[in-house]
Image (cartoon, rainbow, N blue to C red):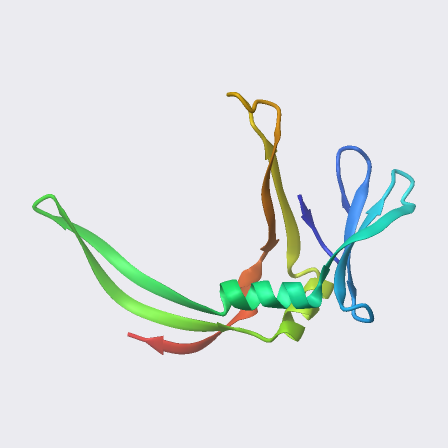
Length: 142
């Protein structure tokens, strides 16, 4: 399930969810609405400091390689054609993208379909969709 700040996301149970960027409290909040669109919960949130720390720790820089692969005498050869380097934009840009609905929060939950843990919930964590918007090209080399 992906949730946006731009509009509510309705799930099969009839409940809806929406993000709210709360600048005053410095946090990203998850609002939960019941079947009648009444706000019932605002207790789930991520502080800006936590979001900033995780963004910059995991995604501060990115290198993108373009390559071609060829095979000769049962060996694989890789020829690198270009490389581009990207840096993360500032945190205010991230918040702006959240507010506009350009970046969504994705909740990755599943359940074990078989085995000894069959039926148990498996939490794959929380991620962000469309994070490619967060980088800007700083160096391109050939």
